[in-house]
Structure formats: C-alpha cells, structure tokens
Image (cartoon, rainbow over all chains, first blue to last red; front, side):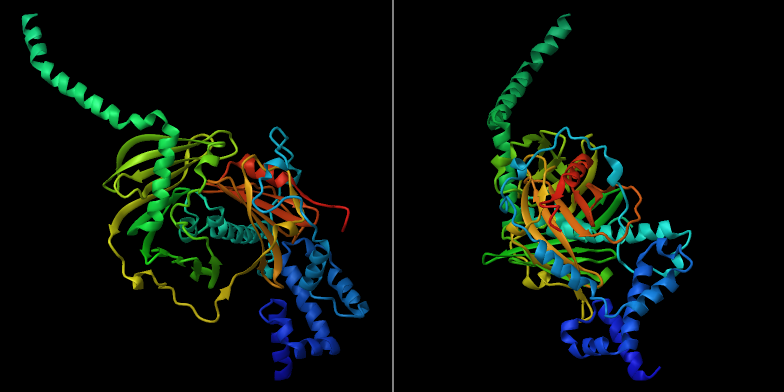
Length: 184
Length: 334
C-alpha cells in the first residue's frame, strides 16, 4: 500500500467516525466518489463498524460476508452516509406541535391508572460505541450491557447538565455531575 | 409526705420560669400557625442566600452507598455571580460558572460542554421561583432545629401529594440561610440521595482567581454539541406526563460517529426534573431493564425505529408512565 493510500484510508476512517467533517474535505469526498477502490474501502469500514456495534447477531450466518460482498458488487453507487439520510428525513418529518414551551402538559393527558405493566417494551439499549470484535461471542450479553451503560451514562450526564434549566432541580444537578461516576 | 410537699414548694419558682420560657418559645413560633407559608419563607431566604453570599466549603454527596467529596466556591461581586464546583477524587470533574455561562470539564472523557444558564440559579440548590404553584403537588412544612457541620439548622420538609414524585428534606443554616444538608426520599421514605456540607465558611469576599478553572485541556478535547429547537417543532405527543410537569427545553444533541441526532426534552414540576431522550434505534437486541442510579430512575422502550429513554429524580412509575405515553404526532406520515 502506498503512503498516499494509507493516508486516504486513515482519513476515510476519520470521516466515518465523524472526526473529519465531510464539508471541510470536498477533495476527499470527490475522490471517494470517483475511486472504486476507495468506495469499497468506505463500504468495508462501514460494515466493520456495524459488526463492531452489533452484539453478535450479525455473525450468526456463515455466508453472511459472502452475501454482503455480492451486494457491494451489485451496488452501483456509494451508500449515502447515515447521518445525511437521517438529517434529511428528520427535516421532512418535523411537524407542528399542539402545545407551547412551558405550557402545562397536564392538559395533554394524565395516565393515572393506566396499566404500567406492559413490559413488552422492556429491553436493553445497545449503543453505537465500537467494541472489540473479540467480545462478540458468549460474552456478547456482557458487551451489550457495557455499550448500554455507556449510552445510559451519556444520557445521565446530559440530564444532570441540563436539569438546571428546570429552575428547580431541587437537588444540585451539578453536584451529581461532578460527583460523577455514574455507576461504574 | 411533708418532705415531698417541701420539695414541691421549693420547685415552684422553677416551674414558673419554665412556663415563661414555654410562652416565649410559643410566641416565637407564632408564625407556625401557617406552617406552609413559613416553610416557603425559609426556602425563599435559602434561594436568596445561595446566589448572593460569598462562601466556600466541602460537600459530601452520597448515593448508592458511595460518598464523593466536592469543593464548592461561590462569589458575588458587582452583581456578577461566579461559582466553581470540583471533585477532589478521580475523575476530577469541574464545573465553572461565570454569570450565565457554565462550562463543564470531563477529564475522564476528554470532553467539555458550554451552556448558558439562567441567572440566579445555584449549583447547589435550584429552588423554584414560584413556590406557590408548587403547593398543588407538594406540602411544605417546618421541622425542628439541629446541628449540621457544627451550625444550627432548621429543617424544611417537602412532601409530595401524590406518588409520582419524591419528597425532600432541607436543613437550612439559621444564620446564613444556606442549605447545609439535603435529602431526597423515595416513595417509601427511604433516603436515596444526600448532600451535606462537611465544612462551610461564609466570607466577606473571595478572590476572583479562586473561581477560575484548574482543569487543563487542549485542542484534542471534544466539545459536546447540541442545538436548541423551538417547542413547536416537537413531533412527539406526551400523554403519560403526571399533572404539574411542564416542558422546560427541547434540544437536539449530536453524538458518536456520524453525529447521530438525539432529541432531548426536559420536563420539570418545579422540584423534580425528568429528561426524555429519543435516540436512533441502534440494534434490535434487547434485554429488559428499568434502571436506578441513586435517586434517579430510568425506563427505556422501543418506539418504532426509535429508542426512548426517560429518566429523572422521580419514582419508577413516573418514568414508566411518561415513556409509555410518548407517541409520534402522526405515525402514518413516514
């Protein structure tokens, strides 16, 4: 592999991890669109990322990789980066709400008495944080838990960080924030 | 018999003194006839004290049988409020507030966030501005006095009127009106989180340099991003929100590879805050688990292709009710 290639691959990897902003790297995006080999690299990195994010289910199928390779061959264009798709979609789906900021939500509805025992929705959140591929085996439950923990901790931090806006939080959200270690 | 009578006679003046003392005490407590109003006055004084005094101290924060020790500094100079809060142990997090700007440093994840905080709200104890509105959902009352951090403190009780929120106990310094101790109580009256000053000193002034950040950071630190969205862009309806909770903010966070968008809706009933996160569903594999960290309960569910997580310092049933009541406004327009 030439040095230039190595550098390109590194930059693609950074782009995928959002450490490079595509808008600031038009030349790289241009290359990515024109160069078939780079295109394949982008696809591969995407696949690697998805496999790493998966707790194990994706590796169950023996000819999975072969089928994906075939699909990549058949794919005429580069798949759009995920965030672009999301952004466009969320824009088209914005809808006006029925209540204003700080208006009481009480009028929207109160569900006292509604059954809260519907546990069909109980589950464990699995985040997108990359995990070692080695953990995709009998430890997949553990690794899934760890990923969910990271996502949960991020939410918890944000909650404590923004709870001051409630003007009320009652108990010092910043004390919680600094006192840190969400359960570890 | 005669002897007993003599003793009793000798004690008469003492009984008289006790009676007088009791009368004086009951006069001093006369305003307790309206205990709710009096407790409100104490809370209002506390709110004023935390934002206007110069003080420094060490705070112990207890949750889930773990104690963290924090340093707190607060300064009010020429109408500008400055605060600094830092953990003395790993991960050495630090929060700096200068007027409205709040910067949080997270050395453990090499990241920081910068927020704009409304004025007049403290790091320690954010009390609602409208204490009267609170009485629809909480009963406020005064308790006795006791010593906290070697200072005389008055107990203020905040008890919920339904089982959708937690109660609180605040021990207010009689002299400075600062909150010396704070307890969060779950639906069974058990303490789930506690903050207490181990030492506190109220000072005439605190040098400005003591309020500046000690955390060293460089260009490699990530700055957490979010954007505030107008409330009328909300595409979710919230049907399971208990009475009294209002929407405080609606923001979109950017996280992880590809700047994944996460919607964050913050609700509050004046004392308790609840966060709703609507994230992209990453994976179809789940195991059941409502969660609890200290006084914070959380509940997560799948909603179409989204992952909904609700958390806050409220009972488990509250976060479940809110999570189960979230719907997309028009599920057929996809």
